[in-house]
Amino acid sequence: MEIIHYIVIIMTLLSSLASLLQRDLIKCIILSGFAGLCMAYLYYALLAPDVALTEAILGGAILPALFAFTVRRTQRIDE
Image (cartoon, rainbow, N blue to C red; front, top):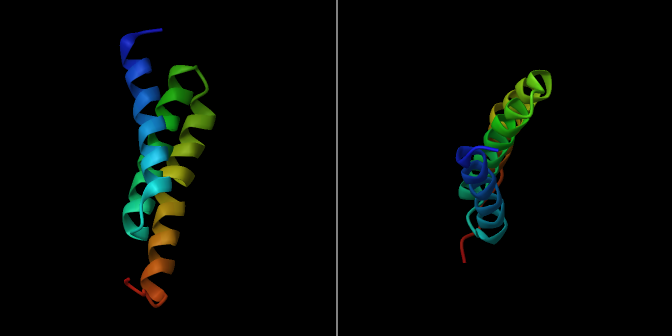
């Protein structure tokens, strides 16, 4: 494995953990979308381009957009 793969794995883990620890939902959505794009890269590096394309479309674009739309449509209560 090349060094870039290890960097992407670490970025995936850090962005996933950061999204779990966020209190702001929009930041959580952005970080989880970034983790999805990192996973898409890892799938592509593992020679699974069909899975990578599906992950990039769903995990990196459609689901974060739907979550952001849902958060914007609901009432936000700041503490």
